[in-house]
Amino acid sequence: PHVAPFRIDSVFQSLKDEFAMQAREAGCDLRFVACSLEVETDATLLETILRNIVANAIRHAPGARIIVGCRRKGDGVTVQVIDNGPGIEAEFRERIFEEFFQVGNLERNRDRGLGLGLSIVRRLAGLLEIPMTFTSAPGKGTAFGFTIPRRYTFFESNQPRSPRSLAGVAGSFVWIIDDDQEGRHALSTLMEDWGCEVAASADVSELLSADDTPFAKPDVIVADYRLQGIDGAEVIRRVRSRFGDNELPAVIVTGDTAPEKLRELAATGVQVLHKPVQPGRLRALLAAFSSRER
Image 1 (cartoon, helix red, strand yellow):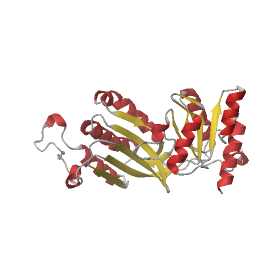
Image 2 (tube, helix red, strand yellow; image 1 turned 45 degrees about the vertical axis):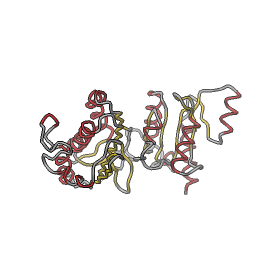
Image 3 (tube, one colour; image 1 turned 180 degrees about the vertical axis):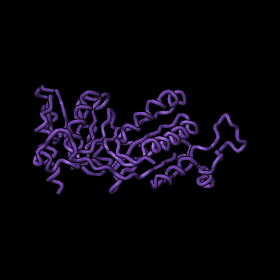
């Protein structure tokens, strides 16, 4: 294996492009949740592992929702593939990793594939020394997890930065919810440059699955106020409710200037930043949130 550091997002984007049409044709809701974390392993072999799992889910769970994402876990990063498909009976849970075995295809109809995908997954995970978890239950879907050594890059940048500017900010895990792609990318890039870990999405449901939450609790929520079908205050309420923490630090970003709207936002008790966001103000808020947690 060729072990080197890389961003998980690069693998996610490649697979997203590859499977977009196939997922649509199968009626699957395939989502790759943005992940700014870096890991050290063989990128090509990891992509092969995830490709086989995603392909298997699309083939055997048509119409299902499939979520691919990552979360911090100790000194590693766990990459997960979760679907809400039909699940697998207990008697078959070990056999699916056997070569040429397929649930529901005991006659070995080759039109349904050769049944090698998951056996390759287990073999490659062993080769890379990546711990693998697998859970499934009839009617409740299937989840795979792979824990990979993490790459630390908090203080790596081509741009010089003052240690004071990073104090209390580097290492914060921030969820960004903004349906404006340019705005979301700008905020993500800014905070990643400060050493934050970022999970960003246009839709909070991609970060907060209705069935399971494959992502660690954020240290801070940053939500745009005007979103499609929902506002930033409701997004924050949902995230806080899921994690059972009504004091979870949060920031609403808004371009509204109407007095009645500002009073409404003030009543939420959430910190408000006005567009265009001033980087110094945002960084000061993140640092204040971090010091409050200590």
